[in-house]
Image: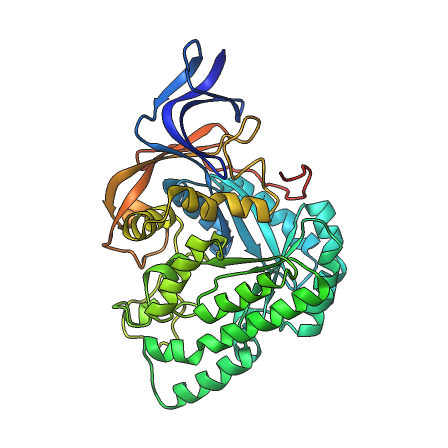
Length: 458
């Protein structure tokens, strides 16, 4: 057999199947064979993966890209993502007008610069978005739609967001329920609670990380989740809760699932798994939603282990920040990079808490592929699937720095931290794009992925 790439004697992690010592052959961007014995296979390049895990390429389902001039963050942040073994990113795109106006240009710009495959969630804010949901689904291949309950009034205007009302959101849920494979992605917070507490704390002149967390308290998120779950159940619409941070929210989701109500999927983010309200970050630890308590953090880890939390999204954005004592009310949220996603999960999950590598693969690749109609093309290792692969050295330790993660942002919450378990090779659709921490892929390799279910899921 002739093939482009042969990965020999690795420990293949195949979600829901197990770990196998085997070899893997790749040709024309696809996996064409999995073998216990690779004798007789001729390849243009042979990669010795002995003693290393061979994972499906990671899928990062929560990114905010395209916000830097000339879309240059598509280049810097997708190449940085490849350092962490990420081969697909799903970006939240937002516009006040019909997405038919902006989406073609965004796809074109991203396609010129992205090092990895990409797709989009579209934010629903206006009647035109509501009316054209079926069009975006069938014509543009978009099967996930964002609803932001967190911003109204001053915050909404600052971010250029049209205020979402519950009537529009519920109508959209009924539309999505009719589209097989569609899902509503909801940012769950009660803005009235947030605005009430923020105004009073700011008026008192309190400006520290704890005041930011107190201004957007855990019950604000829990109330938003409760409301979104009710609307989801009413419309029988699948729901994906983005960046969940609280034990209270997790209990609501568990109860919803116990009732066999409409499907609900849950995402959390790395910073909520590694930092809490009492951490040393100071004001640069500002995120939306904010950091929570250590008890919330550990509840999230337990939720991952039990399968109550489905995915890890980075809520990725790119910016430079002032690390000084700028007021917590005035400063932007801090940037989040994707390169550290897998090493954080290995360091804090696998080594510190005994989380299995199979579970890590589920929450960083397989589950997102299933939820967002990328499976079986992506999210697993199978003959006929895209050759999206991350080869990981579980013993490789690196101190996080800008030189390591190669993001355009000037800050990472993991700066200076030793993380263990880094990819040494990343392959996207059969092309090696990262080797030993160095990007060797090219901008423009990444392609736009339509996400309409075409194959029944086993």
